[in-house]
Image 1: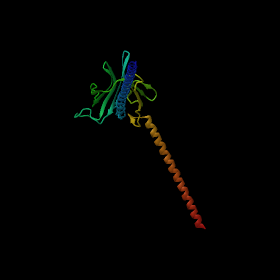
Image 2: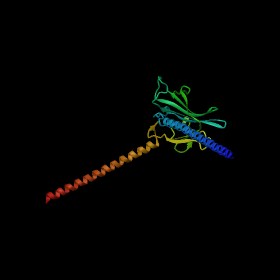
Image 3: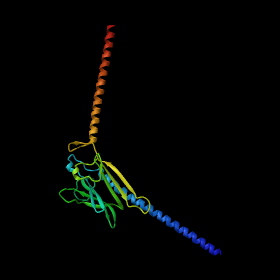
Image 4: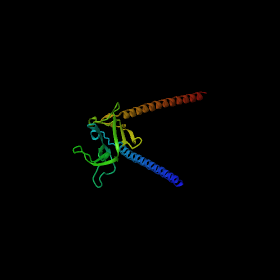
Length: 248
């Protein structure tokens, strides 16, 4: 009887131990899955943000490029973001390169997985077919969303014939849903507006800055005039006082 009870207790303890071990292993796998997904999303987000911050600008808008396209096929669609950016590190060792590169981002879903792709093209030339180095910068990405703001409304596309940069661009990257919990997601909005004159048109930021500078100049002139008037008045008062003293 005692042997039976002991065996039953031992079996129960072993069952609890195995269950606890499985729970710990499952929990660790979930944590590792989320950590890996977060690392993939963060790396891709930082790379896109860095390229956008260094976007190439020129007084002649024909030398600049930012195109947002949506390629639809059936129930699915793929969004492409293509623009010129400035780079300091050569993409190809030992090859002559300038500092302007064409970079393109898009989501590529295949049977082997879903990858966020980056095409990096040194010495871009519109006379040739787009080329460069194609790299998967993040794996397990489920959603790659882009939106552009022109100063009045948001849109999902930015055609090449726009001829200028959008004021704002929103980038959203979402990882593949995990087995449990919510998917890892990262989104940012970048302001591409700068106080520069492009192709003869002054940006709204530049106009605001010019207005502020003009107001400051007017205020400084008024202050100088008031100061000169006060100085003249003080000099006249001192001269009158001296004349009065001399008369006495």
